[in-house]
Amino acid sequence: MPKPLSVLIWILVSLAGAGSFAFLALGRGEHVSAAWLVTAAVCTYLVAYRFYSRIIAANIFALDASGKATIVEENEDECVLCNLCVEAAPPGSVRVVKLYEG
Image (cartoon, rainbow, N blue to C red):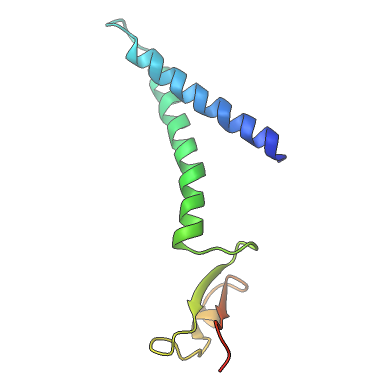
């Protein structure tokens, strides 16, 4: 999806969620349809999932540009570079990265 279109879609989802919450907050004692609550919740979850998943991918799983996780970095105290983790994982999902030669 082109970047401007993606940004526009996420702005619309955010505005729909904010508008739903505003409608709920300004209800002033009238009966509020459950559809407003569901719309507000779904929009909030979508925005949170979209942006929090990017934080998790970057900081927790350390995904590189190809989308593959760097699971094992050479650490002489913990890893002997036996490749057992690479063999146990689905093909192409794990790779071992040597940080230095020596």
